[in-house]
Length: 354
Ligand code: ATP
Ligand code: MG
Image (tube, rainbow, N blue to C red; front, side):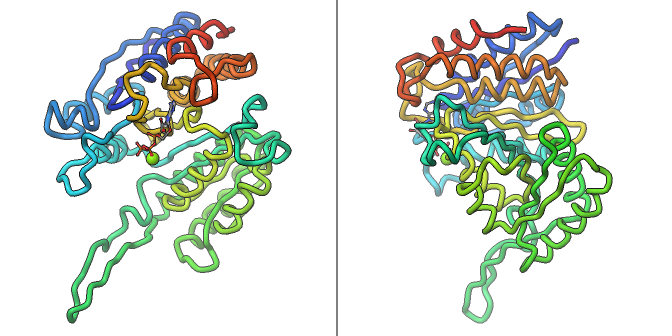
């Protein structure tokens, strides 16, 4: 099997963690009869400096033609002026939109050896292994009308929470499938007591549930869900929710694991390459020092193997190697240790087993 991957290292620690994850990809490919080719492009601040835009058309087209895209991070103090006409993050938004990736998957696991890093007590964290699926291309962030309107000397600011039935159906379908491949529980998070769009999500989810008899569907209001994420996090399997609720809940869920540097993500669409990236940012405070934690990007590569290449065996091998490295005490600085990015990557490579 041959797969072509576009690498978008981006800014800050992005290049460091992407090159670490590429070493893992190459090692897995060597074991699984997978031939990989790569091409590298600029995105974010470095693209603004070199090309005058945070995402060039050439780069977007290369991504659209690829089998998968691996991204590091974008942004940094150099490009932080909020009044600037172009910002690094626009590159990322344009990429998501250009690829049509409507579902953002963020798995959150708590590693037994890292419970001390979490703000929650160890007994609450036992068995936490959840997946948040956030709708990424609709809702309040895109609904029209949107903007400021002046009327009779007053200013009115408008955002519109809008969803079409097909936008809801495609992400719910994916979420049911994901729940089916995991522990069989799907939680729809909404605000159906006040929002019409939430009532449509509920109706479609309830109708769809009969097609997935192995999956138990529950619906939870977002305020209750926010509370349960910290009071009983282990009770969740797959959570699916609209764009803004997902934005908030994914950050809340990330805190459970205790470290930003550990968490991966995948953004998926239909018949489009998946986009894989760690959830952390460009970490300008430690960029260029070779000490960034590469595990979030390495685990993103595991998601690529699983969702874009259907290589579950390779995905599990990477995840288990990370688990073993952590269980055996390997730690980068953010986890209270002293391993460099390269040493942590070596530790994972040494534990890759098929
Ligand atoms: P952004 O706006 O790009 O999300 P941010 O400032 O919100 O940036 P990060 O860039 O992720 O968030 O950095 C937050 C803190 O976490 C910083 O102190 C950074 O050094 C640390 N951090 C983030 N990612 C890693 C990593 N992979 N390894 C070690 N430390 C990290
Ligand atoms: Mg941030």
